[in-house]
Amino acid sequence: MAEDGGAVLQAQGITKHFGSTVALRSVDIELEAGRCLGLVGRNGAGKSTLVSILSGLTAPDEGAVLLDGQPAPRTSDVASWQARVSTVYQRSMVVPWLTVTENVFLGNLQRRLGLVDWPGMRERTATIMREWGFDIPPETKCKDLSVDQLQIVELARALAAGTRCVLLDEPTAALERTGIATLFERVRRIVERGVAVLYISHHLEEVFEICSDVTVLRDGSVVLSAPTDELANEDLVAAMVGDVPASAPTHNGGRRRTSGAGGDVRLRVEGATRRSAQGSLDGVSLEVAAGERLGVTGLLSAGVATLGRVVAGIEPLDSGKVVVDGRALRSGHRRAALRAGVGYIPADRQVDGFVGQLGVAENQTMTVVGELSGRLGLMRPRSRRAAAAPIAERLSLVSSSLDQEVQELSGGNQQKVTVGRALIHRPRVIVAITPTRGIDIAAKVMLLDALSRAAHDSEAALLLATDELDDLVHCDRVLVLVRGSVFAEFDEPPFDRERLIAATEGLSSSDQPFQ
Image 1 (spheres, rainbow, N blue to C red):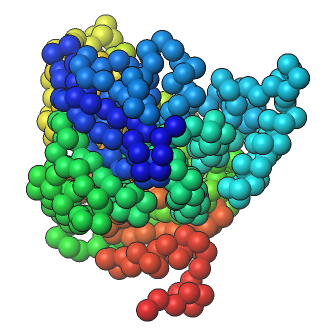
Image 2 (cartoon, rainbow, N blue to C red):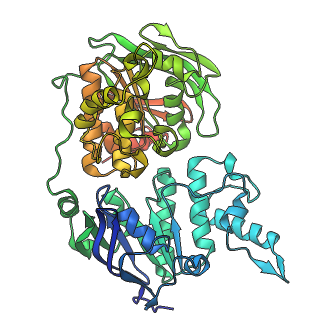
Image 3 (cartoon, rainbow, N blue to C red):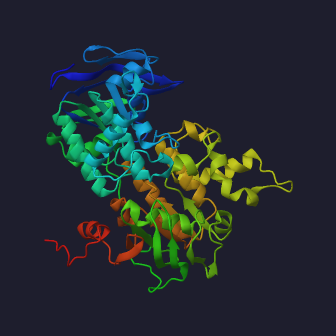
């Protein structure tokens, strides 16, 4: 076992090819006991490939991985890898039909007197959950948990394994702010105990807060590696993308467009009530004018994503109604919402955003097949590509061709496909749920700019439902939901970040004055 400060895991000269693509080029990286190393880079920089190699899932074409100074086991020796390295992936690896305890100890069953020690494992699971401040019974089926609770199960599995090296891939993507603070506290604690941590994130402020060192990947190569206290935010951005991209412009000439300031009401929600395990709604009403960009934010349990799904016709209302251009939509029917002109960008692109085995053009034209089909109801491949090309170019989508399978693209380009599918039919209402989660800085700006331009050019109403506060600077107004109800409204950009955060916690400016 490595002493504190010694190398627990090393990658030496790692190179990996996928066909003619070089994903990694002679990468050197070192994780030391008792230190947290941040790994950052744009989508497609090689982060996921490197994590896969450091986790023992993929073998490098060149170079070597060392664990405690010794050659790592073969990738086929799964048990040896799991005993040495625990990885928490951005995409949940929880088995939904198993209990919390079964998932926490999956592949690591504890035994007593030759028998599986289920009581002991349930007690250990309950202890870990109590330490995190979560009331999740060990016997609960994971299919009944919310997204943030599933993330906690993933983290508990890594901690229960007792490994000396933990890889965290975008661990805060599905956590509320209180959960993020708890995560950081827990990471600091395990680092103090001598565990080596690799922390992958697109949020640079997280890297500066939790990491002692940082490494930047660009185009498969290490371009910067240094202690975080020797760097500024601008240094990391420059290493990742070169120049800092400009913010999305305000396309209405700086004039805030609301239903009360010149602009027909495009979207109206009246008394929306919906009981949901992932955040309920309790009588939410709002209006969005033509060309207006309305942000809706709050904690994950506040019902922000549920509101977006209800407007898009993904979930039905228990009571209330959604009205587009003066006509009430049939509740819970996505096809009816699509016919009414509601474009939808889901929170989970992997599950709801695209069909991985289909090409870029096929995915982007799914919502306009009827318009482009011939007399026999068939669409020619040439017609698909012609229809998809302008939106792909507008989003700077990177692919070998418009026929390339979407599952082969980087995460950022997969999200561009999802956004393109929502925008291609020039929707009257655009519903975007956390559209920038898990994508790099430049891609974030580009996607938000595309949404703003669509709202302006098509006189569409944009409903941006997100807990990413940085995305809200592109909005004309912001509503804050607390426990399923509208708690506060901010209608004068630029929005005060501290007051936004306080509002999401249910605090008004009188409850918590700001200096």
